[in-house]
Image (cartoon, rainbow, N blue to C red; front, side):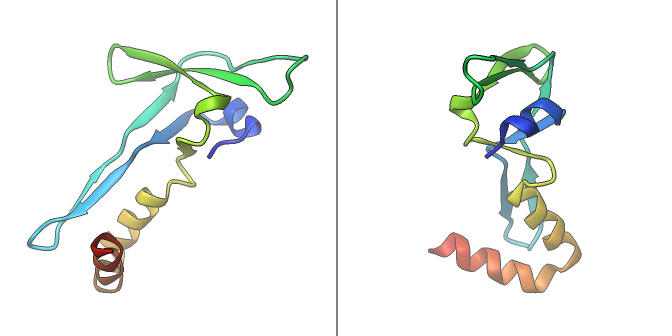
Length: 104
């Protein structure tokens, strides 16, 4: 979940990243990254509300608001990206952990 402060400063937002371990042990990482496409809009009368224009891919645009803040995380906080990085650097320990998480 992103906060208003992160919405004001971050450039990239991760939404719905996935990872899977293949039959031979390879890790497939599928990040979905939204890039900031303008200035964050805030309101004085509604201090918790914000709207960030974002872009995905070449031609898809949209907005990330305080209503969708629970769907997004920053690059540094993305649990899936952290897990994939750890899997690629500490494979055996974390492969067992990921297998136990996906089995349940």
